[in-house]
Length: 393
Image (cartoon, rainbow, N blue to C red):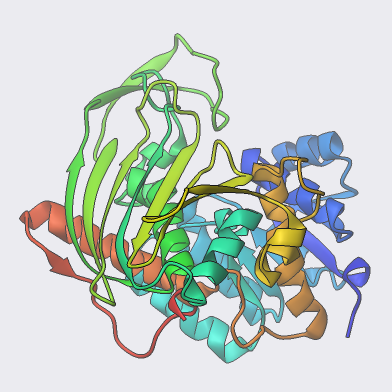
């Protein structure tokens, strides 16, 4: 068994999320050997800015480096499958950003490759690893809320509010056929499957595009950039700004989620509530250290994140004492600690608390059902074969 400090990692992608990966890996003691940028010049620039020793010119160069044990894929969505497949076939563990693939057919193929490899494979659904969400998973599993009946929530952002806002995620050939649902809705769907232990079985979806034409800058644009270019070209939009989705879960529970990337003032607002037969729980990502607990016959409670009062899963995801708020960046450290514990042992745990490729594929299947429902205006079953995925066990 290796120690985490003896494990070497490389990161594909050096933009916003790639930088978060690099910084979180360093915090847990993993040696980041280098980064692979979108171009050699971009790679060198970012490697220097991040203080990383090496800028790889290609994925082949990454895989030729025998000191690299794990590769993190944070490139645009259309590159996830070919890159992750090549990494696994080269005998390296892989951590991939969401969504796992462009289509469920692609993600199914990638799950098969991962299973044959026996290597650690993870999808970066980091929101699972807010400590309160790990605690909520255990609370539901232990029957603390009774039978899960109703699951509601939202994920709202405003970074694509204006017609001059631009990012590669707006381009279906790079981001996929679903944009708001695939980009942020996938986080909510994975999170609630994880917390409730129940998969979504059917959906009724309505998608809307309120900005039919956007102004694309002729030069490159950083994710979440506030800079505006006067040199633009008009582009018609083929993906949704918002989504409203009714849900049916495996145990008969019902749900509803709203997703938006054009909600003014909402920078990164994910909320959920789970109503059970004995009690309720609710969480808001903008107050991430607090879990609301609802009761019928006694006062409601607010649990502040406190390792002394939380489940084993909640404690494992916690890095700071109570009262010291843990936020978005901290979830990556908690997630990577769980992943790299398996890397150190050389294989995936039987039931990891992080999302595997199988979990990422399941979210793709739900997305396919959402797209079909929006086209037909009908309830659509999620098309699955085989046994349960890890998120719902």
